[in-house]
Length: 114
Image (cartoon, rainbow, N blue to C red; front, side, top):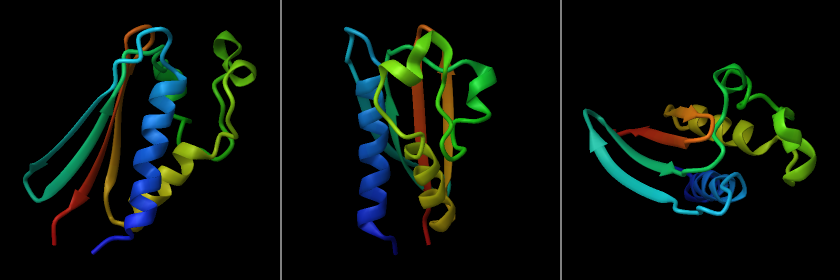
């Protein structure tokens, strides 16, 4: 049981971010799968990546990365990933991020199977 609309919104947010934060290489991979008692969807890009320092804050409301003038050059409110995190919390799921500056990011949404 899940709120399809809010999960779709979370997925669209991740894909939108992958597009916004990729430079000329907009090669985005979406994967789905199952492990243990979870199903997951992943969105991986080869964009600018997120520093380890900033990864701690990306799920906070209104947080925008200010490095490389990103807050001014990329449109956004700083709410998208906070909403994704909230959606995952409500569904008793989790969100995982693996990112390296200059190499891209991978976001995984994991949902428990009931």
